Image (cartoon, rainbow, N blue to C red; front, side, top):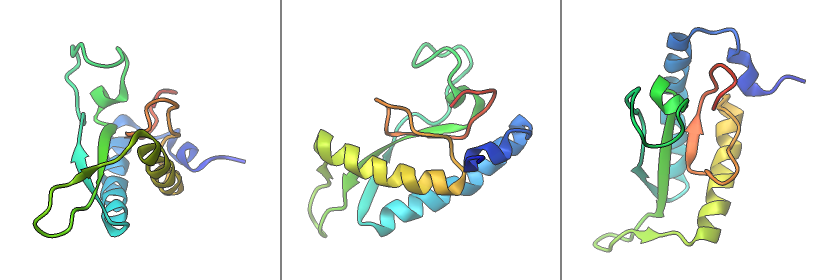
Length: 121
């Protein structure tokens, strides 16, 4: 049975970028609705960037790293998640991302949300 992210296997890079831009706001709204805040990490990287993997889909405008915090009470500072909390939260949000058609999660890089391209995510 095909997975949701396989639906876009025959699409161009531009069509995948449009799909990524369409589903990303849904994820962000979902995260906020669950009572969390977001600190955006790497989104787009230049082609000759030395950060990350050489063939990262960040360089194709198809990935974002999201650092999630507990939403603070009014007047208080954000609360960072412990590693165990972050893993549980990202697993939950990756399940939602999967349902939208996003690429599979990467073990050890759970804050990475992307759309696949040329068998990369």
